[in-house]
Length: 178
Ligand code: HEC
Ligand code: HEC
Image 1 (cartoon, rainbow, N blue to C red):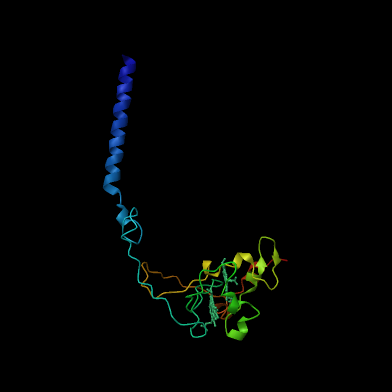
Image 2: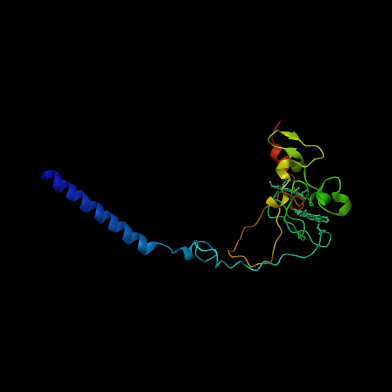
């Protein structure tokens, strides 16, 4: 009998706790439409409205460089990359202008030293771009003039005027290393 009463008491307590929990979660829970910045259900992809993205149509040689976001940030792509993607093992158009042996002749910025260095093996890759840097658009992205969904007040600090236009990551990485 005693055992039964204890069990009953436990069951009551559990039901009570469960009800409390439920009450709390329904009053403060967000619906899936309210989560994130797209404001549509996370369970349904059909109603997602993508922001208008007008990418530049200016071709390489016609565009103006975009200010670096911060020191040694991967520079943003100022020109159109239409018809250059996807980058495949056999075809990487970016290299045809940004390879260090070609860049100066076509007025493009040459890939920096970090792109000719295998960081896993710890050695330079000579005239060949490192495999780690082959997929350019993984890090370098074009910009569209879409209205930002979230504001941003970040202001970069640069150590020098030069650093606003050129990266020096390989030197920065070796700073203080003997
Ligand atoms: C036909 C030559 C050409 C091709 C192909 C090309 N680029 Fe460029 N790129 C340029 C030139 C020239 C500039 C300098 C801006 C200009 O004159 O339009 C530039 C600028 C850039 C910059 C800005 C560099 C800086 O110093 O701020 C980045 C990043 C870039 N390109 C990435 C790419 C990527 C990624 C691809 C491949 C998807 C690519 N480019 C393909 C010629 C080219
Ligand atoms: C894993 C990310 C990553 C990939 C992949 C990558 N880059 Fe970069 N890139 C960077 C970063 C970070 C910097 C700036 C720091 C530095 O020097 O490495 C940079 C700098 C550059 C610069 C500016 C050099 C300067 O002197 O200021 C050019 C041009 C460039 N990359 C072109 C390319 C091209 C073309 C490819 C593809 C073949 C490529 N990158 C692939 C991250 C990447």
